[in-house]
Length: 60
Length: 201
Image (cartoon, rainbow over all chains, first blue to last red; front, top):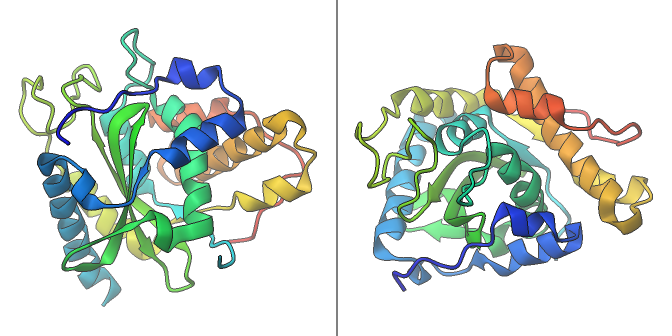
């Protein structure tokens, strides 16, 4: 789980059609936070919390 | 599946993108801001427009903000932070990138990058922008109209339309702030596409 995923580079994406690129991006969307390494998941949660705290006064 | 939602991109997103990625693609595969805007963002905007709840994840205790996470395309992992506007539009407000040890920007490393020599960058400035812009400064980005209004032979026209929308969004932001941002330069380099319809903000 903590392993870095193989990254498709910009150069590789350049060689794909728009539809192929879209398919690749869709296939790499994560549907469960528990699939993430702990460090990144915790950072995501902390950032979301921080953003929400900033939003609350702004949205009343 | 429900109807498409409008997707807007906040200036705070572009500011964060400028913090994280370099202006030029590196020889070792680190993408540029333009790579990210042109290769990855159009599809992410599309899926948010089509299936906001399906592709975003809730964060425990944070009902206001949802997160779209993708792995393995251009960067090891990315997180797009989004909120729903009063009009049910999706608003992209912030970005995190996990580069797994890569130096994203020479001299401007991502705050968590172990190779960063100067420690975490202050985020207060960007944070203030998030707070300010979420309330009132979002830039509308309408991508769906491109698909049906133009002959998308081989998908190239559609792709250019999406690029143009991103470019307009960035151009609108640049118009408010001046042309100094790197993504503003990227946007100015994007091709414009006559006839692309776009919902009025």
